[in-house]
Every structure is written in C-alpha cells, then in structure tokens.
Length: 187
Image (cartoon, helix red, strand yellow):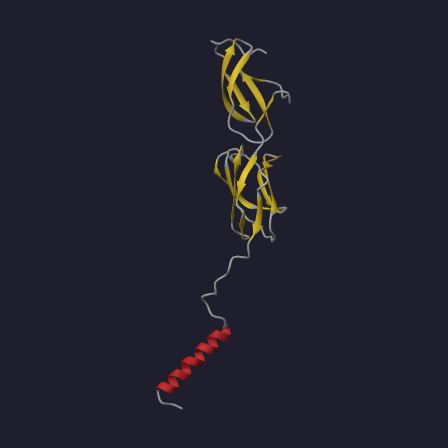
C-alpha cells in the first residue's frame, strides 16, 4: 500500500461504510490509524482516498460492527401504544435501516431515543401473551435476552363521545319540553 509520506501535500481521506472517518498515517506509506465512526450491524467497507485516487472496492477491506443485542423491552401494552427496546449496538439512527416486530407484526414509527442503546416504536395490532420480538439493525438480527417477550393488554378504553347520538338528542329535547310544560302549568 502506498498512503504517502507523513509530511505530504497529499490529501488523505478515509470512509467507513460511506461515513467520513478521521485518519492519521502511522508509518510512512504503509499504515493508517483510523477512528471508526459510530455504526451498527454487519460489515462496513473501508475506503482510502489519497490525492483523489481511491482504494479498490474489496470485501476484504471491511470492518464488522458488533451485533446488536436487546437487553430489555416493554413487557406489555395495547395496540397503538409505545414499545421501548433497550440494548447495545443499535447505531445512531442516521441512515440506519431499523425494523422491530412483535409476534411477527412490524412496528411503525421507529425512532432512536438514545444512540446505540434505546429504540421506540408504535405497537402493532395483535393479541396474546409472551409474543416474540425481533429487532433488526442494518439487516442484522439482534440477539435477545430470553426475557424479551411482549404481552398485549386489552384495547385502550374509549371514552364516550362528547356529541350525543340522535336518540339521546330526542330524549333530551322531550325531557326539556315536558319540564317546560309542567313549569308553565300546562298539563
């Protein structure tokens, strides 16, 4: 490899998985020390560019981020509620392909609450107890602690609408009319 001399006018850049990384030559022409940017799941290609010339694309020039791991999750809730997953190596959420399933049904509106360690999603429709969960980051399935299952609670109770239905309107009207008639002495 030829990365150029320590003191050089050549501009050297390094990307890992397409993200810029800081790099310093450690031995003239031969090695570079790279600060790997945060990432998650699977392999990331390392590309070095010196004075506009890039290294060849080679799967051997990859690093592997640690596999995502789920340590804990919301134990129960209702469809449409919030589901939180805590763990390690979830990434920052930037350009990440994150998916969460409960009992085989995909959650929606996934967001990263804490980079690398906490995700939140909306619970899909479903029912049952001890439903398996699945978390996937950048195409890599997370390993799970055995206690990470989810149980659906009954649906969220709905409050009675503020607007009465037509039978209630008729009933209220009749009561008001009768009250007025009796009040005015009409019988």
